[in-house]
Amino acid sequence: MWRVQAVKYLAPSIVVDKETDRAYFSPMISPWSKTRTSFWRAVNTVVILTILLVLGGCVRIPLNEDVLFQPKESVTLGSFAHADAALEEVFFESVDGTRINAWYLSRPDARATVLFFGGYGFYLVQSRPYLDHFLEQEVNVLLVDYRGYGRSEGQPSVPALKQDAVRAWETLTQDLNADPATVIVHGHSLGTFMAMYVAEQHEAAALVLENPATSAEDWVRVAVPWYLRLIVSFDIAESFRTEDNLARIETVEEHLLLFAGQEDMITPPSMAQQLHDVASVARSRELVLIEGGSHPDLYEFHAYGVAYRRLVNRLSPATAISLYQ
Image (cartoon, rainbow, N blue to C red; front, side, top):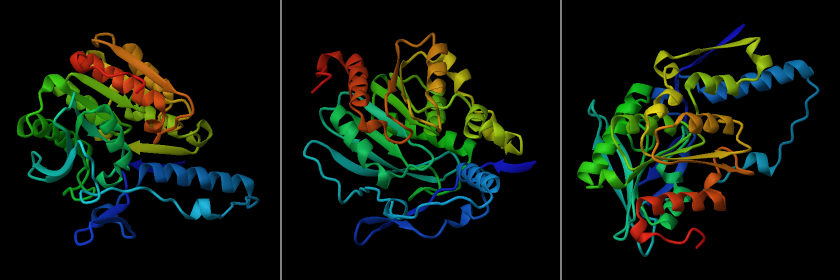
């Protein structure tokens, strides 16, 4: 049986040229990540190799422009411009002294404030779709680059990321003076573990879980088809194996909003449904299943913005705006 070590996530390096203020992908992997295995890349590799072995070389793979080119829109502090909001860079020190980079989008008429944690491939310079979404919601937002990502220092680990997440909360509520009673903690994919941990440590106004996983073990189980589990075994690092959103959400008292894409094959909607069902003490709870939505694109759907606006209206009824404007 093959054994794959699932310990760290391997992410492409993104570099911001300070002179031109342009962001681009670096062809080199950062030194700390050279010795680590990307969990999802390992899964994909095993799947592809198994298929090739079964088909015995009878596979024909198209190589065209859609495969060769994968454009992604980027944004920098210099290229961002909006009449009603400002985007500024923030650095804060984590518990161990590591400097973490974040961006703070603010506006004078903000109806609430969001603390956002992205997925394992999220970078600030790729946050344009989320920035546009939060601008439409008329909220402030602090977005964080995980340690080792972008301009954040350090090496990623589950315990360190959890500490960084709490420090991000403290930076938002203390240094940036956000009222905890108006803060929405929002996590996407891997970021749902960080969001859940923050909500466990501090009382926020609301919790948003987008494409959430129930637990690390469940995530690995659904990522690997049953026939591959016959020949592949995963050694999950203890620090990640014990992460369990299903257990944590039982005590969440904040307003709860969950999003899931019905076409999501990475964190299937059944996970969001399980989390919704056990969150019995939440002030309110809503699960939005987005037809046609997959893992990285829910913000493109109208239902996503409508549900988010409904949540913000609930937190700030005096400034409620139309759900369909």
